Length: 530
Image 1 (tube, rainbow, N blue to C red):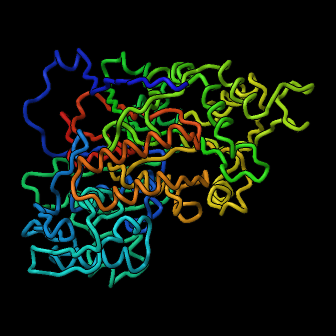
Image 2 (cartoon, one colour; image 1 turned 135 degrees about the horizontal axis):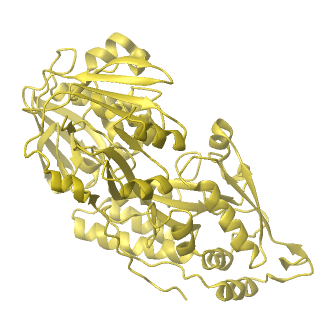
Image 3 (cartoon, one colour; image 1 turned 135 degrees about the vertical axis):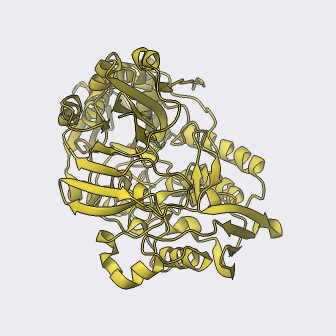
């Protein structure tokens, strides 16, 4: 009934032929300023208090993490020089970079790292749950920190790559208190020197940066341009050097222009629509109805028409995208309206006089909650799903909510979950399925606590996750995650849609802008030819 399909997407940096012919300099050039048009302004520089990718954009220049992930998703050293796991996985000894200073001149050391981790845990700041395996911490010396865990946690060092675990100067936290949000002090390659809210944020080169020879640029300006069309216009008018999160129409158009370079990379963010598995009417509690909805949707048509074959790929694993540790291609639901109707009939939903499928005289009418502009193409996706479900006899009402009201609606406990479906995206920002599966599918992760907005619970899957959480080797973890993903695919607690493909466009001659897998675009080590 479900046809597995491995979908391979080969997207890489597009270097235009004219730029190659002109001959890019062999060595990076020092100096200059880079102006970047961003869609969302950072509303805080207290990096521990947020995990929203757009909000974190500016934090990449100021703060650094213990580890990072390379282009292949592998965990690599950053402020942590190396680490060793012993005692059956229950002790992690971290060796830190020596001679690093915060922007305020105070030393980065093991005591500073301990302070930061304790702050995250003590104040229960966003995603602190990912580090609750830490029982105690010992400062062995200035460059060595020992973590004593309650159980093995193989994903922990990868978790530290997430920007929300950036290291802040303890002295600055003590000096500014909550005002650290506007006075960031990290170890990063740039210092924030000006912030005009709603307009721009200016960063200047850190002359004492610890990585030899970096950064190249003297200054970076993040200019806030919320309108997607205007971002492209400012780039083409020469007002900015980099445009991020442009429309797929503009990306395709600029790909053919030798004045620009387009960069594309598959991301770790998935479009999906949670279905209320705790539906008091019993409509979406039935797995056959949820499977029918998955078979009713033509994903390829949406990728081709809404995303123009550029901005998304059909997802082939529930919520875990390629490149994330734990990803395995499980499959996708085929577009099969006939199979969808048959599944509805099996569940007791048959065509009625209203033109909708009915059970016990009640037509199937669903409420889908969306927001406008939360993700690229979100309203078009909602409207397409609405039309395709209508074709099999399901009526969908779309309610578009804004800002705080939307957030409040999608973070309700099950008894107050006033929706049938939601239109959302989910990003595995740690690069490890440990985060995705435990915060998304666990019976203990129901909203508002975490992100199980389906109110889904499968005890077999739960037991598998518990075993994976305590595994002492990665091959065992990988096998357990595959089992869990197969169960989630079969149970279809949400409408599985697409994995995001992130793109950015730079002026020709701009090099080294990174494209992170969760939708950040740091230019910390970028340089320009002129």
